[in-house]
Length: 374
Ligand SMILES: Nc1ncnc2c1ncn2[C@@H]1O[C@H](COP(=O)(O)OP(=O)(O)O)[C@@H](O)[C@H]1O
Ligand SMILES: [Mg+2]
Image (cartoon, rainbow, N blue to C red; front, top):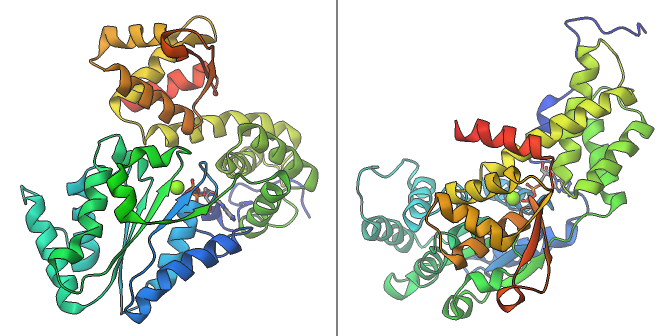
């Protein structure tokens, strides 16, 4: 075979498997989680109440994929309604219920000023009339907390049966915050009664297995050798985010193509690391609000590599209105999203002062922020 790649040739057998929103046919190493999830939801198919469920685990551990795979299986099912809600996008109770409306009715509610009570009434009377259970997945439900909407969303969904006869609603809430319980009031926790399914971080061998499968389904054979994949797995483990590995494969192959190579060589990896950092980073940034972006910007502007939280708070306050508690919530979110590292110093007000550093190179942070804010 010719070693040189022709201009109209490609090394990708199936490029879409490297996109972040690609849902794989099989979720490796997640059999038990998927089984439990199905066990909880399937009673709805028999007209019984589903078991509310919480999926909990750090980013890129397959939570969204698990929900999408479940809903894909239920797609043909006439006996129930399903509604997938990405709470980063639909981040208020009104937006959440507009989404649910769309899923049930098949068209959007009139956008201008339909009050929540009307949306709610329309949705619930239909469910009551048809006696069809509804399963709502609140993906990244923590995003609702930051708008203080989580309690009211849960309350509206889970107590609808009190007002509308025969309504059965099951909720799957997805969290990446380890302290997700503190995002809900104790009243919500008690009406929610959810069973938890945990998605632990992938071990090195698991990362290897998942990436190997992507390579197999996405690239022509021989394009990526084992030793190159091994290096990508190492980089991925360092960052602690599977998406980084998926993105690295994509960019390494694009770079090889650009240089008319038929296989990825080590030289392609340096380029892939940098591009993947930018790529991952921009996608994470898209789920931050303006205040969180501002905090991140301030961290990226400090001369040294670390800043303490007190100083940071002062710098942020110079530019925007922000209370102390809200500031700490936002820092926690940035930490959960693995954008920053926080170390306790044990000093400061109630020992709360922390040393903060970015997990990504400053230049990349600044560049991506500039692009976002444009
Ligand atoms: N077990 C798995 N097998 C195959 N691909 C996976 C697995 N877990 C995660 N992925 C892939 O990793 C990326 C992130 O997964 P996702 O389900 O979005 O994670 P989370 O919702 O937990 O952040 C997606 O591209 C997904 O296809
Ligand atoms: Mg997700």
